[in-house]
Length: 316
Figure 1: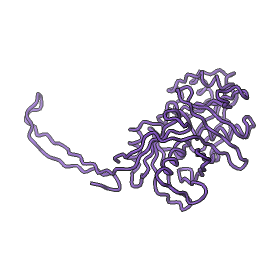
Figure 2: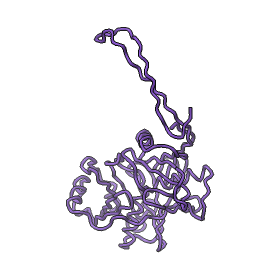
Figure 3: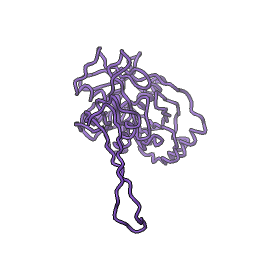
Figure 4: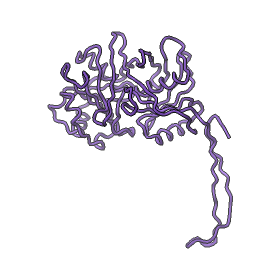
């Protein structure tokens, strides 16, 4: 049986069962559950890498119309990836599609690597943008995505919250990450949907040395960034990034588009990084994620390679 949205039908049957110790002659009620599902196109895309298993995977349900919030959240918990997305028909005429984004802990209004991975899957399934750019509708509004050769990039959304972070919160983060006061150069809000707190450390090497106490971070979503001296970073990268979000079910995210976008807005405004640079993320997890950032003045573009690793159908 097929339906545009999952439903559960329950049939109750009363039957006499052989006695088991302690049960006596009670009748046992069995619930026969029939779940109506559809076979939906599915892809798992690795983002910020050209090599499978090198970046950050996102699970993409390519035709997510008709799914309710509970079903989407449950599927995201089942995949247990940092994000799972559902491509749906847009209700904004300016958008090519609508994207719902879930972590194992709940829904996000925006996330970067799911934006790129979902656009990749949409294009591979024959999606054609209305204009020169792909336009995604999501919780923060409309996000532009452009194709640059074989890569995809999204326009960094404006920060919804900026400025200094409360000193009590900074101290909690410092303690949870085992940092000294000398390790920290600056701390700022870089909230562009996900409420990231950006922590600039004294070097890229120090970022990699951090061993977090995730329980002590609480609900805070924390992004670490450390800069390399020009020419000294691996493969010429300018910055090393790590992201911790245990409060939404993501202990450490391998490569994070939204965080890198927020950091780019902050660090470009303070002239700490050049107009074009590459950040490394995932190094501490054995990944080789590379995030390309280009500041064109009116827009900052955040992008990288994408590659499909798994494709097929999923019953939802």
